[in-house]
Image 1: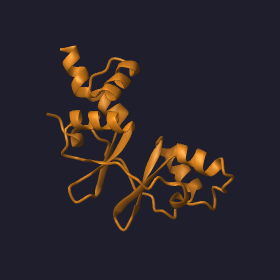
Image 2: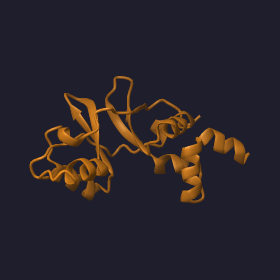
Image 3: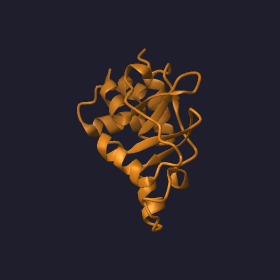
Image 4: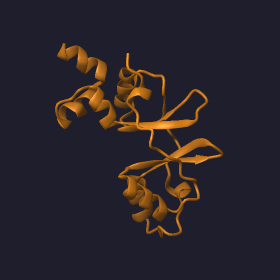
Length: 147
């Protein structure tokens, strides 16, 4: 069975809760990301997405050069462990309706990110429509139906 560590992206970094929204948005733009993990004292404390910035900050008229990640981040953070199987995480992502998860080791230190795209490649989806079906229905069920 394939583990998440075999398909995850390891090119990830924390931002601090004090990072301005402008700086976070610049990192997202430079690295073509839709979210960033927020960490404090070497621990994951939340996530900030482009949607958080738009809905929670811009819509409320917050100044992106002054507002911080802490003010708009989502503190409830779902994550997975690097040694969990891709099938397990496909199902988990389907259940909680997310398209990306931070990946931590058993000491709960950030080691990567697994995304919809990473898992879609594992599911060997031929197009984005079948990839989405794989995530929303769960990889294991989709693979069983294809066999």
